[in-house]
Image 1 (cartoon, rainbow, N blue to C red):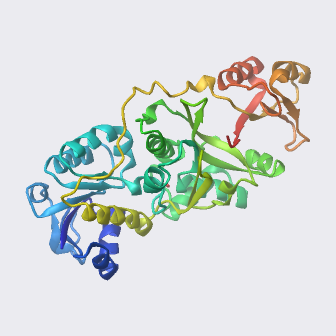
Image 2: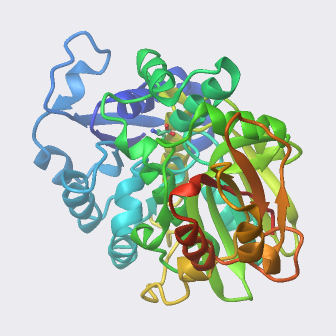
Image 3: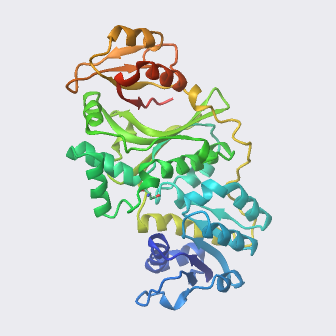
Length: 415
Ligand code: HSE
């Protein structure tokens, strides 16, 4: 039996134990010997739990136990989880995690530590929950230059946007509904501010390029300012508002990354993902485009990906590990946000002089829309022109229009 330990017995950690218990026979076939949870680290008590006898509050019992070869880290955050992951790797144990914050923040250091100790650091569950995406991107698509990855990477915000679209409710009401269903945390900032999606696209971009992309370098906007009026424009334009995380390879070696709510044309397959579902579209220069779709969060879907990584480690016990490695190039290949091309819907006060707006955008394309909301006018800029509009130019020109600007929302274009 392969002996493992689980650090953190919350939703995902207890899901890992449940999947191992539920699928024992299948796991025995896969690993030849089976998986035994020897210890579970958590400061809380779980007296009624089937694994209550494995619980410990002392990490030394795991780190100092030579029988435990794989450690599952499901604590979350980048402090205690970081220290314990380093200890486990240094002790020669494989580590498997769902912790995107830790991977996005300290990935290269942890990978180096894993390599120097001849063990693996695997994180399939860190992006897309149960959807296979890390290993497919790293291994199955290894023959490609990855040109684009665009995805709905956060289930909570996708649920909120879907409810705003379908029920006509505002952001605050949809957020409360998401919290009542247990989809959104009581402190939902990491989700609604786009931070969670940002960490995930940073991880995917790093896998796609083999270079560490620091999530803190990615321009990130959340969904807190999305309104029911934006939903009305989306409908009129045959589009949906989705929080997208996007990586695009520009001119060969520049990486253009962004997280923001965008108008996604309804004929794009990504818009099929509603409610808590995630969808990730990957374009490779040999593959063309493929889409990965499914449950991006939740106890058992996430545990499904964690346990698959445990099996992967079990198959490599005593062998050279095969895992993602990221070189750190100091983010020099990340395109400055101001230089990225953009097209956008702009909503304006009707008092504005339309000629002055046309003058500002005529070189990059401007198209006025039929009225959608009372007491405002709207146009699309940056489309249908050979000359690109950059984010920097858009900001400058909107600043020139001053308080007449009600809002702007980017329009997703597939590269
Ligand atoms: N809060 C995340 C989401 C959990 O809503 O997608 C999964 O990473």
